[in-house]
Amino acid sequence: MVNLKYKCMKCGTCCSIPKDIEGNYIKRIPLYPEEVNKLIDIARERGIPLKVKEDLVFPDILNKKILVLTYRFILENSGYCIFHDPIVGCTIHENKPLSCQAYPLAIKRIDAFNLEISIDPLCNWIEKNYEKLKQLNLQNIKEIFSEEYENAITFLRKNKNLQLKIKKLEVEKKIKISRQISLDDFNRFLKEWDRIEIITKESQK
Ligand code: SF4
Ligand code: SF4
Image 1: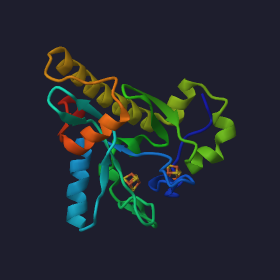
Image 2: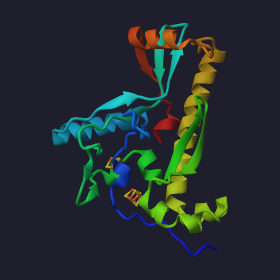
Image 3: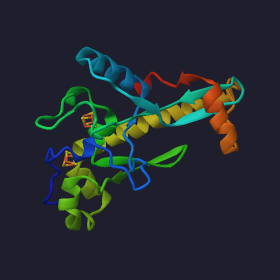
């Protein structure tokens, strides 16, 4: 049993996305399409602008469509999420996306088809407890981040369901995903082709 339990310090650091010296965001907050729809509704009710960008996409060269699996926030000006308040923190706690519910466990992309759970060193609680955390095993991590670990697993399960749906559509020859595509072609397809969001019944749970 580990004598350590994660407790968010409500510093708000994770609700902003820092940029590197070239101006590129150094982390992403991935969002599933159904989460984006919910966030759009909340933002509309509050009269605040929400900007998101496609994140994980596949080109379907059979139907000439871009299949969208996830989006991510675009944060402007302050660099803070539009739902962040400096005094109360997240103002959509009950509706925040799974990736925020899992944080400071972060979903790291290994490649287009594989994700893994990691601990985000940018979280202030992690930084504060880093020396203790680096000696721990997976079971300890599950205990320390019990709620966040469950949410991270739910995120991964949703992603797996979407990947399975894509594979099934490929096997049924309803789509064709190109695994070898030049960057020029990919960028051209992104410009020219319509989008289709990939959602499964299970992914909405
Ligand atoms: S949705 Fe909430 S927790 Fe997630 S980045 Fe925005 S303010 Fe932070
Ligand atoms: S950076 Fe870590 S401690 Fe700070 S608000 Fe985010 S999760 Fe909580």
